[in-house]
Amino acid sequence: MKGFASDNYAGVHPEILAAIAAANDGSHARAYGADPWTARAQELVAQHFGADARSYLMFNGTGANVTAMRACCRPWEGVICANTAHVHVDEGGAPERMGGLKLLTTPTVDGKLTPQDVARLAVRVGDEHAVQARVVTVTQSTELGTLYTAPELGALADAAHERGLVLHVDGARLANAAAALGTGFREFTTDVGVDVVTFGATKNGALGVEAVVFLTPGLDEGFLYLRKQSMQLASKGRFLAAQVIALLEGDLWRRTASHANAMAARLAAGVVALPGVRVTQAVQANAVFAILPPAVTAALMEDWPFYVWDDHTGEVRWMCSWDTTEAEVDGFVAAIGAAVSV
Image (cartoon, rainbow, N blue to C red; front, side, top):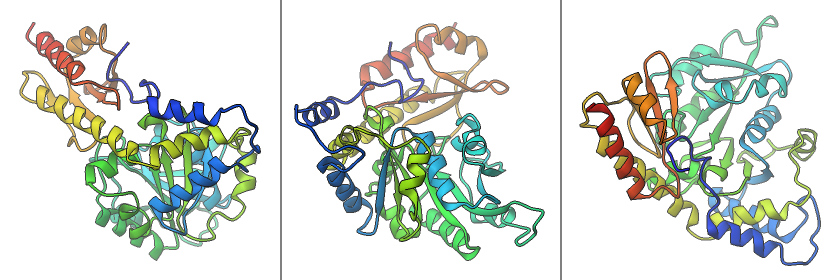
């Protein structure tokens, strides 16, 4: 089955599988991250994000996001986010149930928070009856496939820091953002004042690993214990680390992300002129959002899996992956064209 439902549907990149196999060389290694692979992965993360970056490997994005935000919050504090944020919509209530975090949400046009949103939600400071804002979390690239520029993230960091808040970036698709912006990671994180990042690898060809990366010194105090308490400490940590090494030691992270982005651009270019199809968001990373007639959506989904994003408007989401091919994109465009012409 190949489709455009999610970059999580894609398999593992062969170079990452080879790295895992190489780590499984028959020898023993210290458990719980006290191994040479984990040390190398942490070294590479610091090379990409800055010398002060402290990284902790995790199993999945929900665990990484919730634990990162929990590390920054006391029990009476909350998290500012867009109402489309993954932590609000697609993490099954984990921030609230597992992290005890109150989410302070606001609607956005394009999935992106602004400094004005932060100012509007960071209120009632010192009021014992109100949850106190502590973290601002944004997603890069966003759930709507849009991107924050470095200046935009810098302005958000300034708005957060002026109020004593922490800026967290949910980077499930951070590589797609960096590839699209033509930069490395630190240019729109460390260099503009971001405090903590969830660096995603799974959606970019890994088997299953994310990293919580603290960029502000001291913010990770006690995180070793919190990671364990949150059930995110891998006993055989070398197999998580091997995936990060494979992505970051060379340019694999950029090659895979750039390809996924290019396939999304090809898909958008192919459908934009089709009758009955309206692309609804700027195509800046590896996602295309469009509105189709409901009957067309139903017909297409018989052979091409994808998600309906908004049942009320008919908006759908098409995701491209590291292994999406030009032939698959062109075949899908042809299928859409045939469906809308019936």
